[in-house]
Length: 327
Ligand code: TRP
Image (cartoon, rainbow, N blue to C red; front, side, top):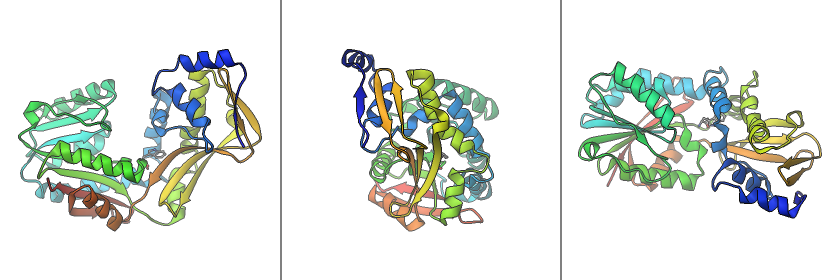
């Protein structure tokens, strides 16, 4: 049993009062008060977390980035051949610069590139670099949260659109959220529009777990950075050596789960709140759902997207799907 103990009622209310709705403090205080403790994964990406994530994508054990890149590089021309009418590429969450460059090179028919990102800084930086390298391309950055409905600028309304969502980021959503997300993308590209999406496949447990628990310990550092961030930003006193990174494959649910496991019975203070941990109790920090091709195409159809083509890498670990909106 774990309970939230308020050391001092007044101080606790003050702590909760100063909480910015939807902010890190709010999420941590609420998440750690749940019977199964959790912290939402969107808080991984502070400056340190973003740098560690970059390192993850280059790890030998983390096969998804390399496998997906091989698909875009090896099948770019074939992908482009399915899209003769497409003029605009709309990227959901920018920052995957190498992948976008591979697609832009493969698709000379494009006139517009519209990256959507919540980070204005990232958006401006990437837009400038791409404008310089693709001078004939109109770059239209859209500063927005792609998890909410996105309205496209006028110049994009009447032209053929391809949405781009690489990195198996859809796997970090619960399946019902993935369905809602696909339906919103469908609204954005409109009838006849397309979505090119990268999705990690189900495979043997060992390969999956190794990708999320690499021998170098980079993913462990990435996960533990959440607690370090709480110490830095929330006056928390997590003992980082008292928690360990854990990646498990939950075969029933078809997902990798990342947890932070308490190595001992301990209490942690965050401002005026106290959270007790039993030995072995975990904080659930992220899921990464894996889809067999048939399962993913079923999900796509449920969102009224028709699967047009599927590509996989030589080892058949990762899949890229081209879907078309049925309107
Ligand atoms: N969406 C990718 C995946 O689930 C990348 C990713 C998100 C990731 N969070 C992660 C990779 C945490 C490793 C650890 O694989």
